Image (cartoon, rainbow, N blue to C red; front, side):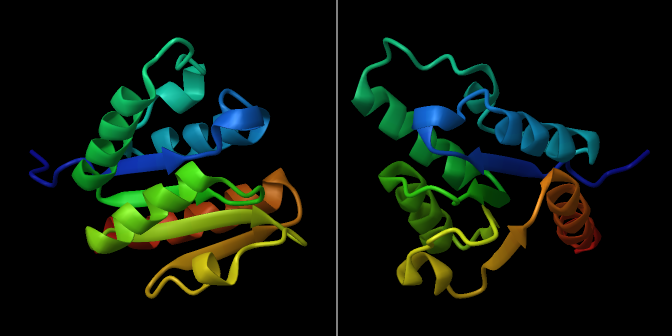
Length: 140
């Protein structure tokens, strides 16, 4: 019997235009198929409408703290994703950020110590490179 616990991945995406989007669903599929548990399943369903902002804050921050890894889509600026990245950093979590090539990414975000940034040309490129990084995390 495998005694190794299933690692939890918090998938961070901007709420506007990304919940339930093609890239979000791709990231969710990659993470799930590799055997990780997604600790932020609401980003795949887009079901946050009508929620109280304070409830979203506590849910998201708590879920980041309970996760082992944060995967963040940073192609578009997002205050929320930035806060989730910072929470992962102060909680000493592994941080993997993905962005389309040519995205204008904040120097502050680029400079997060110990983080990994994957810049991708297309979805095939994203999938190949993210899988390599996540495979390494599974070996640790």
